Amino acid sequence: MQDIRWNAFWLISSLSLLSLVLWASADAVSALIVLSSGLFLYLIGHLYWLHKLHAWLKKPVLYHMPNGYGVWEDVFASLYQSHRKNSRSQTQLSSTLERFKHAASALPDGVVVLNSGNEIEWCNPPAENQLGLNLNQDQNQPISYLVRHSDFMAYLQAQEAGEPAIKGQTSQEPVKLDPIKLDPIKLKSWRNPEITLEIQLIPFGAKQKLLICRDVTVLEKTETVRRDFIANVSHELRTPLTVVGGFLETLSDMDGIVPTSSKTYFDMMLDQTGRMRRIIEDLLTLSTIESNAQSPNDNEIDMPKLLNQIQNDAKNLSKSLHKTSHAIYLEMDKNLNIKGAQEELYSALSNLTSNAVRYTPEGGDIFIAWHLRDNQAVFSVRDTGIGIEQQHIHRLTERFYRVDRSRSRETGGTGLGLAIVKHILSRHQAKLEIESEWGVGSTFSIDFPMARVVQKPVEMAL
Ligand code: ADP
Image 1 (cartoon, helix red, strand yellow):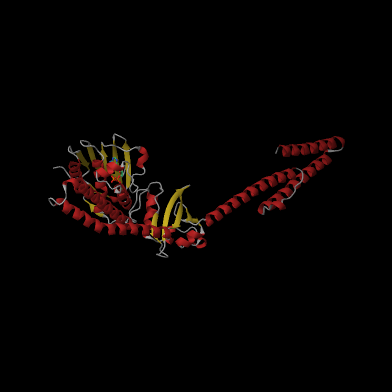
Image 2 (cartoon, protein in one colour):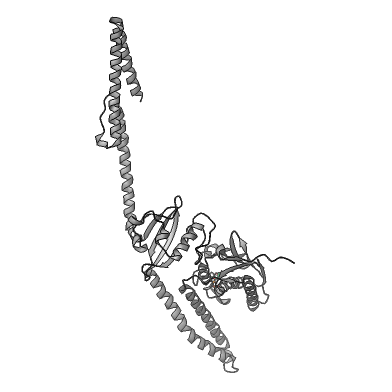
């Protein structure tokens, strides 16, 4: 720009000087004619190149850019450089985008990019295949118009609302929170019921979502074979074991049949058959819960009644295990119920309380609590027992994972209790939290989502 200004300055100055000289040497009219013709030509020149620039800008093809003359040569040269730079980075950008699309298309899993209104921005061929989409036709269409599956709709709404999905609650007006990353869900394909799909929504960017869809039919089949195998083996073992256990009990009850010298061995045999029976019962419970993928029926559970029963069970267990039983406290919100499967929830809650009794030395304290906290209904069992070292905590819900095998065995444990709890809770969209300090005690809590909570009207005091 500096050059252009100087250029114009010099040209106009020279023209004025020439006119002045002419005025001095000839007359004013000729000087004026020279000055105005010079300025006129100067203006025409600029108008010409301005017109050329305007024409080029209408169709900005790099190689058709005019060369220009004088100051315009510089203008066109700078324009050429910047245009070349822009088109180079544009080419780079589109080739990166193309490469990304190719890579995403080559993925075996289906990928759908959704905008904040859940409309399809882009999807890869596996997603078209698995979800029955067609990118050309369905771009900018809301996914809920195209994937019409009640579980998927509930999942989509739950993700928007920041709440776990619960079957049959699609019409409920959710509390608006930021979209969250939920665990994936499994559904039977609506196009081919033989196919099982695993779907997950992952939020990213400005309220956009990535929908990942995976065909897990083979995995599901293997899992079903494994579950059936465990269920069948447990079933087959239960009958002979009941017979053996029954005979052992009968023999040990009959006077004089078992010699005193063998009594200890007999008791050990009885103990072990009892243990095997408990393991088999737990394995059968686990496989029943696992094979039942459906969410349980939502019956309202009378929580005060259930919790009183759990407290009594814990007191009885404590008496049977120790000379000095534990102090077992119960503190609850009597107006708080939840919806779920009564038997399953009884099993989960009593598993946690019986663990508290079994892993708390005699005379210890156990606190059972049930109340609302942070928009969730929370059941918790706190004990003053042996506690758990941090490195074990994340593995406790694995089958047969025990911190101290012998203590678990001595107190009648099977190593399957927390695995059962975990499965029951996932069917109720609830979460297990474990806090513990070695030698101090543990707190096991279950957080139930508000969608499961039923609050009774507060009883008026008379
Ligand atoms: P188990 O039948 O062995 O108790 P669980 O699955 O119920 O099996 O528990 C797994 C392990 O977690 C137990 O073996 C024990 O080591 C630990 N555990 C569970 N509850 C408690 C508790 N309240 N205090 C200390 N350890 C616990």
